[in-house]
Every structure is written in C-alpha cells, then in structure tokens.
Amino acid sequence: MKKDVLLVDGYNIIGAWPELQKLKKRDFAQARDLLIEQMAEFQAHKGWRVIVVFDAHLVPGIEKRKRQYRVEVVFTRENETADERIEKLVSELSGRLIQIHVATSDLVEQWVVFAQGALRISARELEIAMKEVNRLIAQKVKDSSERRPFSKIPLSDEVAEAFEKMRRGE
Image 1 (cartoon, rainbow, N blue to C red):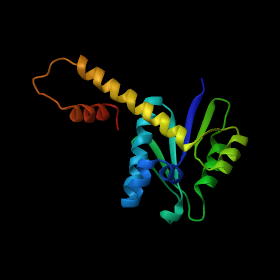
Image 2: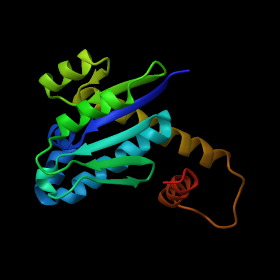
Image 3: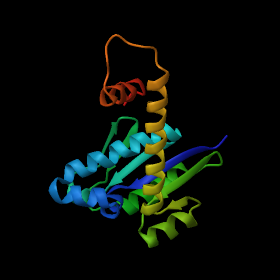
Image 4: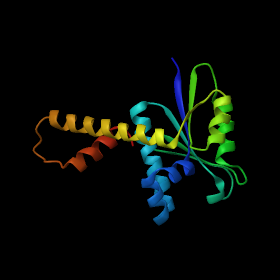
C-alpha cells in the first residue's frame, strides 16, 4: 500500500490563499501558524505525512525542524530556498511505496518535482481540498454531537469542537 507525503511550500501557499494573504499583512507569524493548523487538519483527515517548508530568509540561521501537531515544519538553512529543500526532500523520500505530492504555485518548481516523480498540487487546488476537509470535519463534529448521549453539562459547539481536536491529538 502506497503512503502519501505532502510537501508544502509554506510562504508560496501563504501568498496565494486570500485569507492567509490578509493575515500576513497584520501578523506574519500568525499566518504561518494558521497554515500549519490547516495542514494539521488535512493530515488528521487524510492520514498523509505532511511537511511544511519555509524559506530561511525570513527566519535566518541554521536549518530548524520541529513538529507542530502532527505536521513536520522545516525552516531551511540560510541561503537555501524552500524550493531547493523541497527538491532534496522529493529525492530523499522517493520510493516505490511512497507517493509524494508537492503543493506550490511556482510553475518552475512544479515541473522540477514532476520530473522527479512527484505529483504537483497548485495552491488553489490545495485550498479547495482544504475547504472540503474542513466541511467534512464540521459535518463529522455535528453528527457526533447529535449522536452523543445526553450530558448534564451543556457544551457549546465551540467547546465540543475543541474536545474533538484534543481527542485527535492536535
């Protein structure tokens, strides 16, 4: 059975999604965090390994890796672009049982990773997929709240959703 890996060009997606574009103007770090949260929802729903790559020029220094939720976040080394790091990851992770998807709207990058055997996803396609994931999660939360046994403690929809996220380990 093939395992799916999604590599996300973080700043490219932030620059392409209208919601994140607006947020970036007010608070760049918050836009980054919101993208990572969205990718955590994607990961939880799809079960794919998700790696979000950010260019070092906005966070200078040595390469940094961290896990946030169940998403791997990589800040490239200084003088290394996200595109270069994504190309290396495609090469390192490629295998017969692994299908790599790269989310970017950079056409040159799409062709480079496609030539290496990865599938390309535009920022718009990822945004549409993310909206569908959010819709399905909201429906699942609604269905489970309607089926849950009567509780003597009334919970608002927001609290129920927070508990659901905790249950999924986010």
